[in-house]
Length: 401
Image (cartoon, rainbow, N blue to C red; front, side):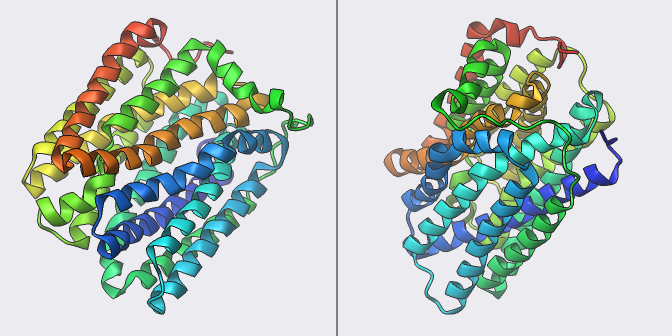
């Protein structure tokens, strides 16, 4: 095992951070370009649906692959696919041939790559650090990744002035660099799963989660709260039509939640949460919902930025607690399949939540859709306190030796 300051862990978080930087630049360019091409809120939702569909289809297979094959090579292959999409978008943009259908196809391929990348990358970290260091390492990794979430949209928004092709080209460079770093990680010593991909093996992660109420409650809480409360899919509409700004403003809005996430992650790295983690997590989900409502009714760009910072901070605390619980309560032989189910739920809440937000905005209007989502997140938190009392009363992160 390596320490949090080891070269192996450093290469890991650098690779994860650079991947996030590339994805964020890609996302802001795609969002702005698809809205310019279609002028439709529904088209923003369809991007999320195109990314979610392959994750839903391949998640269990990806989890089995993460438990059976070299997780580093899976991460490398995922970078290669995302790089190919970015290069294709670059060439099509430079020739003015990038159409909405091509963007949807690229989003589908990116979603496929992420379906295999996420469980493998999440399962790599416990192989690189000591068990006692894992919560701090997760906090640090999330902090530096959020720096990329801050820098990516802002950088992508400003580079977009040179044209979307410049943003896509920069994303491709990020994916190449991240792939090299993932390939350089040490090979884990843990024995890998050798059983074939039967239905019983594929669904083993689901059975494990269902039999552990704390893990089930933590994953499902994030799923439904973010599914209902996500407002980021509608940020292009807020930026252009409500807050009256341009691509630069959109980049700042997308970066604001990450600023809050970085700040609290640094604090959690220095002062780890050790007590009352269940109550803290539920309180943060409630704060996430309140911040979403305030953002929905805001007409001030400055207020919207501040509220999104609070939203990101609350979400980050919840994420660190949830990820630590899932990783610490899962044995290595099951970690890939459990992480795959966790990734599926996260993708459902993000990509399918993006589609849900687009449809709701098209039917009810943008502002009512965001307000309704914030209320939904608060209701989910209240229901989960009742349905998963063991999670609410959970005091420490780990009970396993």
